[in-house]
Image (cartoon, rainbow, N blue to C red; front, side, top):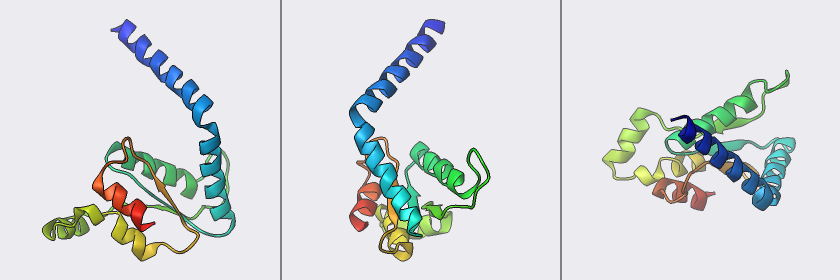
Length: 132
């Protein structure tokens, strides 16, 4: 078991090193886009399915609350439809709109959509990206 744990940790470190090497420019561009939106009093609208949705909520909580030091809250929210909205969408066979409908209702020009997804193939993820 310890060998398996060590291997998983090594795989994770290898993946993070590869990510830094191959995607640092794209990550920097995304970060600068978000910073620019916040500086210009726009908001970040985040979403994701399952564990990625939990990561989106965690990211937003760090923007709304303090992070490393005391500072004003930053305008960010997570698209996480409530059970009533989800059941209404399901009843009408419109679950693919679980993120896109609320996004279209609250987004303004200059706001930034932040999608966290392991695969980006879910229909509701593709719908919100198309809506943005």
